[in-house]
Structure formats: structure tokens, C-alpha cells
Length: 203
Image (tube, rainbow, N blue to C red; front, side, top):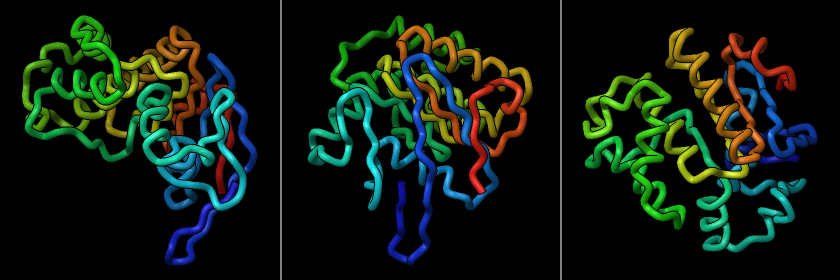
């Protein structure tokens, strides 16, 4: 799979397979294309060579509106830079993710995820009042709230201490198993090398 930016900077990635309930750790230093790979897998970028297939769906064959709906239904993404609606509370941001994913509002599910991530006390706080580590955990809750069949996590533990790092990886794995989802984590956080056995390193 290959992708080239307008400035000529290009990346070539090996073939990857990650099935239901399987985990894949993609390691690599900054600048090797980890975030580009995640954006390709999430259908946010279109590969110039190769294909990305989720279930029976080839993402490259979908039109824009169809892909947006498919992503909302089936793909949960934890971005390296979180994109929240700043005027909303933590809980409202999760409910909005359910709305955009075409799901029914489920406050109990949202609160359960926040509790698992030890930030239930922040549910009604403005997203702007949170620390970077707290925002990271909200981003993870948002990615999980619609029970996606593919979970993509871009540096999900970079802003977390060891305790919360362990909690987050455990939650991602648990939710992937519950939803029978594939879990792909891209990171330079070497703490995760001993937590996910299926891994590749980009160079």
C-alpha cells in the first residue's frame, strides 16, 4: 500500500491483516508514516496503490457520503490530536459521536466508559477544562462508544502515566473483544511492546 502527499513525500506500507478480536501494534519513530497509515486504514486518506478492505467492503470503492456513514458505523478512531466540540461537555461530546454514528442516545454506556477510564467525575465539565491526559481518555471513550468493528488508535498512551497506560490498553482490548473488533495501535510508546505480541515496526 502506498500514499504520496502533494509535496512529494511518499510512504510504502507492508500488507497487513488483522481479524476480529485480533490486535496489531505498529511501532516506529516520528516521521515514518504511522499516522498516515492509520488515516489510510480509517478511510480518511485514499491509497494510490493497494486497497483497504473491512469485512467485505473496499473503502476505495465507496463514495464520500457512503464512506462517512460506514466510518461512523464501523470504525472508531483515537486521533493523536483530538478533535472535540469545544463548546460541549465531555458527556455531550460522546453523545454527539453516537448521533453522528446513527446510534440511539445511550448515556449509560457513555458513563460506563468514562467510569472505566476514571474520568466519570468530568462528564459534565467543559472539554476545555481537561488536562491533555484526560482529553486522551475521553477520545478513547468516544472511539469505543459505537461498538466499532475496527478500532484505530494513534498514540493512545502518549500523554498517560504507567497506571493509566495499563488501564487504557486493557480497556481497548476488552472493548475490541466485546465488539469482536480488530484493534490497530500505532505508537512510538515502547511500553506497549510487551503488551501486544502481534507487532510490526515501520522504518
